Length: 358
Ligand code: NAD
Image 1 (tube, protein in one colour):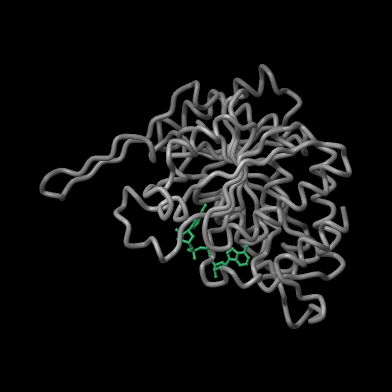
Image 2 (spheres, rainbow, N blue to C red):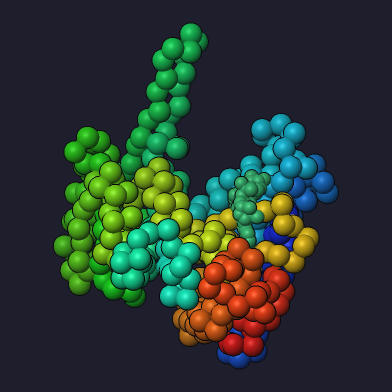
């Protein structure tokens, strides 16, 4: 299995190195063979090649079986022209890989309930759902127009049957290996694209996924339900802009940004992209303070989705769960009122205890 590895900037190299250590431990335990290829993207690529994602990097990613990314960007490159900023590399990469399905788990670890900003009785019911967001269509990719007088603007939201079907398939199949429930979020009382979305998703459920429970929810209600009773959700399926907003809301209610992975999936014969949801955290870069768990869980998602190695993926996830239950913490999830100061770890030690628990 060939994995393109993009360490990126800021804390990127620290967290990716630890995720690779964990992959190597999993490889040993489950008799797997991973080959890593270093790929430059982001500020480090600007420094070396003058651009955030050289064609060589795209080629190396396309030639791999999966891509593991840390994070890119930082103040050093903030004065770059917009078309040459580190984040442009990421957009170009997503485009080149054709990854249209963004999968973001919103899961609260039992050991970290105190970090949940929701009321205790709501948190007590648990949070464990996945947002499946369409990533390459909708209003972000429609026509954007501003007239010369700058007193009129238009952004166009479009969706085709093909785009809806392929993302709905991802959601139904994700639900099939979980609790078999999909909530499709739209604004069908106002938007035409939502009306065909709702119709196509319903038809697919009746034809191919009758084992899955499907309900439809307006996006305004979904935003409310996520904070009112997140335990009702298993898989949320939604279009690009709604998913952008709801997935941030969902990650926020589970605790630290440093814990959450994401996967971006595309066609079956292309490499998919795995990364933590946070950025390059320049404020703590190079200090061994970063939480590596988001990246380690992204590596576990890679094993599950790209390589169908469910057992190895679960082993990593269970190890993370165990060490959190045992009280080990990095600074971002350390709560002086509840946690033991002697169990406060840096990035590399945190990965070490996870590795030992696998
Ligand atoms: P950020 O996510 O990097 O950091 C926000 C806060 O969370 C900071 O206080 C940081 O220290 C903390 N944090 C983030 N990840 C952490 C971790 N693993 N462990 C502990 N603490 C963690 O967001 P930002 O500060 O807005 O952005 C910094 C840079 O990252 C910018 O250049 C931005 O453009 C870039 N960025 C990149 C990506 C990406 O590569 N996918 C995503 C978002 C932001």
